[in-house]
Structures are given as structure tokens and as C-alpha cells.
Length: 480
Ligand code: NAD
Image: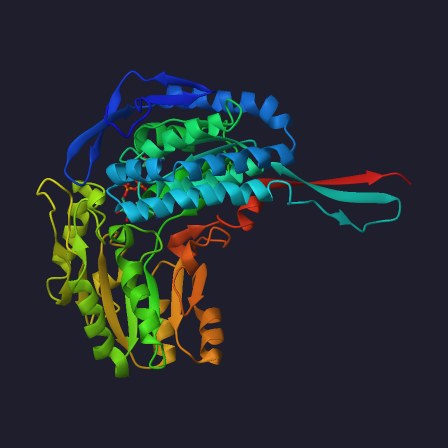
């Protein structure tokens, strides 16, 4: 076993017991293509067991626990996660290929989500409603019951933090299906949660293939809510499967997020965000900013400054902690390379450089494309690699039209010192989040997040997520 693994990763967690599955799947280190571990290949049978265990937890100690005590356990999980940041970061760097500094930030965010939802667990109250004479009416916030969490490989810790954290805070029992490409930190998290006192069955983890464990979870009649993050194609399948059981879903499906840079922008402040939002986690970020819209008067200046920054982007193994690591897999490398080929009619403004990257790793060079038309295939599709296009615009109206011109709407940012323009555009942009003179607001555990259009629906993160992971009961008492 690899020295940073302090547990056997080939087991699934069902009702507090770690069990092996009939078959296992290989886990590959994308930095060099080496075999990392073998993980459980959960199927419908394991999903059945996990869901049964979750229901037992809801009917047992977990279901009876006060919100205050649930919150205390989540806070304790957060504390333990924060103690283990380095262990978790090294594990994630090997599993996802994420440069160590970025993996560390994810581990800190996981701890922070647990602290936030630990503190929030007893803060969501019902209401009393003035009604007819002789009645007292009030509402109760209740958990859905058993929630399913289908998580991708790009930010396992952050996505587990925001969805499982909020679901547990509201008293749901969770069944987590991590991605087959990267699931070590999900397994580590479940162990840490148990150490912190989370009762058996409140969190169950079944690794496996999307078409097997994922599909079984999405279509299971014993689940009362599904939270999915991943591709549009799979999201639509999950919604369809859950729909057959009339189960609500939250979908977070990525985007083609723009940054709008106006003549009066503070370019020194903007520049790090313009580049970093495109290349963080090698561009495999749902909220990656892959479109940079620049007003014509400053276009050449911005292009030159971004190009300089790109030329300094080093790409190599995650543990070398350079700016950019490998993609998650050779399959993802093929997808991104296919897009780069479709850009062969475009001018490349700049690219990054490989530094100690073995041929066996899944590397692509960060690539900045110049003067791209908003209709180009690279300006319309989510690439999920370190690729950005710069698109010139003339007026504010044109910028808004281009920004709103894709099927997505997850994140947008406006760089301008004109306060009225900031307010106008913040309203006009079709996007779940809008940032003014920043991008991402430092991660934003507290900030509701989610998309419109093909970026999905429902909100996670922040206090808002607690509404999504609970249901409302209205009680009307007639007492005369
Ligand atoms: P995917 O959507 O297929 O996988 C995401 C999760 O869904 C994984 O846990 C997977 O096992 C599961 N899954 C797959 N098929 C399923 C099914 N039929 N039912 C239930 N669950 C299922 O994504 P992918 O194939 O890993 O990546 C392909 C593309 O998706 C990427 O190139 C990228 O564009 C996009 N993507 C987006 C995000 C995001 O954060 N929005 C994350 C990962 C991938």
C-alpha cells in the first residue's frame, strides 16, 4: 500500500462497517500513470445495503439527535479535518493530480464547510403564520430522509463538504458515490467523520462506476433527494432516473464562465484572476473562467499581459507543486486535445511550459487563444482543461450579449470602476453568481452557488443549501 494511505481503500462503507466488494477497480496517479490503489466496485447490491443502513440511521440515534448535537459532531469533524490537512492534501495530489498547494486549499475548505454547517445546524427555524380565527399555524423544517450524493473527480473534498455537510446538518442520512477516477479523500473523510462521533449509517460511501453504483443510486426508490455534480449529459440522466421516483435533484453541471474587462478596469488587480480562474486545477473546475471578454481599447495590453503570465506557467507532477498539474486521466487529455485541434484555425497567444512532466502523465499545455469569435466552438463549449479564449468587444451592451450567449450560466465577473455599470451588469448577466472586481471571492463556503440554464439548478454552499436539503411541513391547529 502507498505510504500516505492509512487505510484499505478497496472497501465500501455501509452502516458503519467497511466491506470489500466482489471486484475492485484500479486507481491511477495522473501525474505519472502509475497504479495508486484498487478501490471497491460497488454495484446495485451495495447501494441497496447503503440505503437500508441510511434509513436505519434515520430511524435510530442519528434521526433522534438534536440539531445542537448534530452541529457539534459536524464541528468536531471539521476540527479533525483541519488537523489532517497535510495528509488529505498529499492523498488528493496523488489521486487527482492537483498541485499540493491547491489540494491543501481543498482540504481546508472541507474543514471549513463542516465548521460552517456545524454552526448552522440549529439555526434554520420554522415560522408561525397569522391565520383564521381559532387557528395556530406554524412550519417545521425537516430532513428529506436519505440523500444521495454523486460527486465528480475534480474537487472531491470541496463538493463533499458542501453537499454532505449541509445534508447532515439538516439531519439527513447520506449515501455518497464518489467518482471512480478519484475517491481516496472521500474514504478518508468517512473515517475521520466516524472518529469524530458521526453515528453508523449517517454517512455511507459506495465507490464504483457511474453506470453501476451511480445509476443504481440515482434511480433508487429509497432515496429522497439527489445532489449531483458533473457533466450535463450525466446530469440529465440522473434527473431522469430520479424523476421516475419523483425525487428532487440538485444539479451542478459546469459552465463557460466569462470575465468582462472594461477600459476603466484596474488591470493590476484583474490580471492574476483572469489567468488563475482559467488554469486552477488545470482548468477542470466547474466555475473555471474560460472566456475573457476585453474592451477593444485595452485589448492588446490585456493580451500581452496575459501572454506573459501564460509563458511563466509551469506544468508538472502534482507533488512538485507547480502552477498546473496533469489532467485527471488520459481520457480527459484526449477530450481536451480534441478541443485544441478544433482551435487549429485560431491564433495561439501563449502557452505554458512542461517542467519535469513524465510522458506517462496526462499533461496538456495551458493555452491562451487570441481574438476568438463568440461563435467559435472553443468559445461555446465547456472544455474542462487549461484553455482560455480572449474575445474582444466594443460596448457594454455587446459585452453583455456575448457573456449571455452560451447555454451555461454559472459564474461571471465584471472588471470596471464604474459603479453604475457594475450594478447594471450584475442584473443583466445570466449567471448564478456575479463577482465585481474579483473572481470567486476567495472560495466562498458561505456564498450560495449554482447555475441557471445548462449549468444546472438548485443551490449549494452557504446557508441557502440548508433549504435545499430539507423540506417544509405546515402544521395548522384548530383550537377554537
Ligand atoms: P460524469 O458527469 O459522467 O461523472 C460525474 C459523476 O457521475 C461520477 O461520480 C460518475 O461516476 C457519475 N456517473 C456517471 N454516469 C452516471 C450515471 N449514468 N448515473 C449516475 N451517476 C453517474 O463526468 P465525467 O465523465 O467524469 O467527465 C466528463 C465531462 O464532464 C468533463 O469533461 C467535464 O466537461 C464535465 N465535468 C464537470 C464537472 C463539474 O464540476 N461540473 C465535474 C466533472 C466533469
